[in-house]
Length: 563
Image 1 (spheres, rainbow, N blue to C red):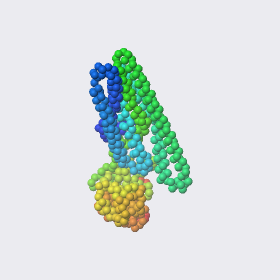
Image 2 (tube, helix red, strand yellow; image 1 turned 135 degrees about the horizontal axis):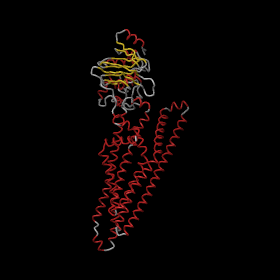
Image 3 (cartoon, helix red, strand yellow; image 1 turned 90 degrees about the horizontal axis):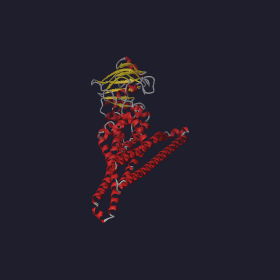
Image 4 (cartoon, rainbow, N blue to C red; image 1 turned 180 degrees about the vertical axis):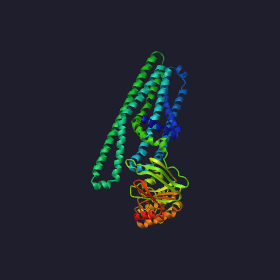
């Protein structure tokens, strides 16, 4: 029942994204199929009737060839243009919906703790964004559209044959649906374990390839490189065997469709013979009945591919639906603080997943706008967790958090494999080059960038490869300055930098932080000295709140490590 609800959630999102074009595509597909059935049936009637009319001069003169020939031309042109329009509309609508779902899914990941989950399982989440979203393509193109087309084909065949004999029409309608949909259901049931296994092996193969590529040096040093390659080859071989099993199943489904088609033609032929013997049916109408039944079963073959991939689509829907639901689409950002304060926490508690002990215990904290506060304490005391709460990247399990809009300079310098310009524009996508040069100048990086051959267009490698540690940190500082926020969160901003570079970065931070609120997590004296208030954390609790100018403040500052 839950899986059905997940599938309905995805279908609703499909319709919400572009219902008009999706319905238009399904309608065009159905009309194209109906035109094909009518074309074959009318052509059979016309050829047979023309042949019989030619047996006598009187019949030939009385026979009207213009109306049916014009109808055949119209149906042929309609089928051709309808097929082109159907392909254009259905595929364009599908690609648009999938793009919209990717944006929705990505926004769903922008909720608290998303960054932590992304770092823990980047490969799996990337597969959700690519493979699982692509699997949903089959829901519309290979399931919903063929279902609509096959129902229309069975209905048209039943109606045309019902004009000749209502019993024949009803039997053909029920028989077509039973055979066509029955074979599809049988195929989907047999394909389910194979398709699920294929998805698991594909993910395992991708993860193994990434591990082999990223860790080949470590694997070689440990002597595990041949074993890793062998494991990857074994997974690939199992995946190939699974693909072969699916192809064999699709072939058997095609054989069943062929048998059902031959049985349909044989039964209609026998029924037409009986009706003709009773004088209720002439030869042209018998040809119409036979060819209509033959053409009506053809669209059901399109369901085979959808039936094979139905399990994969259902699994993708089950994985993605929780993130795509309306309540998960909205990022659970921290509430907004009053204008006079930058941050307020009331009895806040946080426990990280997989940990028995809370990271924060009933934290009460108020920071006024314009205040500079440093959070100090040993590693694991809860400093970074406190900043993550303020940034809205972490949701508290208890208590409430209200924060002003802020910018977070994390411990790690987050740079991407892109141009230097685009790495800067993450802070402000609309920033012009003049603004970029201004913040680079303010961060002390402008001269270094000017010396690069491509300047702002210089490509950076993964993680900012191509820049030194100091240059990367200055680039992160420039990005911080580019974003217009009155509340800065600084998590050990000069960790790992040499003394001269750290002093320069801190001086620039101090100069450009004029009038802003600062919350700094640190265990270094040079960083804590920027603050006028020290919060001492121990075991997830604030054990001291010290003000500048007091002996306790000076003593706490003196106990910190200088470098």
